[in-house]
Length: 210
Image (tube, rainbow, N blue to C red; front, top):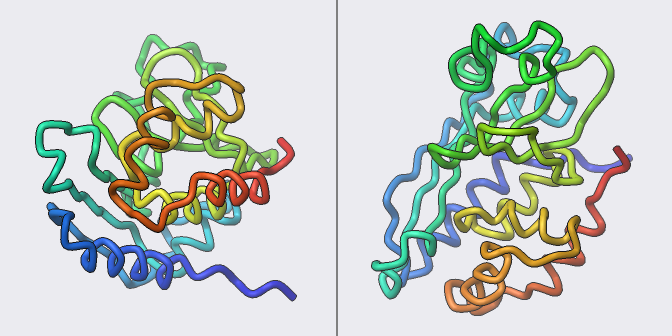
């Protein structure tokens, strides 16, 4: 039987890596180590997300780099919402009164609200849909090809570098974007032990069929 992935242990290990990198400036670290109250967790959420909240209840990790103070994009931003916030209606954030009743966006929930203008979320549906999506608050959410467990594993590998999710989109699109170029250029400078080839291999091993 596969061992259950420890979201809390992985998150704490990520925090330690960030704190031990003396070129980084820790702007905020907030980890809720206690599980969420089950009353906030819906069985219509993907199983991996239910498991996350059975172990812990959200995290905020923001860091910047002492050598790249003039480049806000060379920073880390992770904001996984607590289950209470996630359980609330997305009206006014994702969808509005004018959104058609049958629009799937009414069922779209944000979980990693890492920027004011972008977030990662999932569709809350009766039919299983474990895929995570990148959403820019316009158009349709963009599939990332992984479930939440895979997302969290790659999040830890990327240290939450701003817009690292766009790297997955570049891989799926087979076309570079600005964020994927920056990721390849700056991640080895932020973390000398980082290997893009290892990151790509990990992503390919975590991809789901959806």
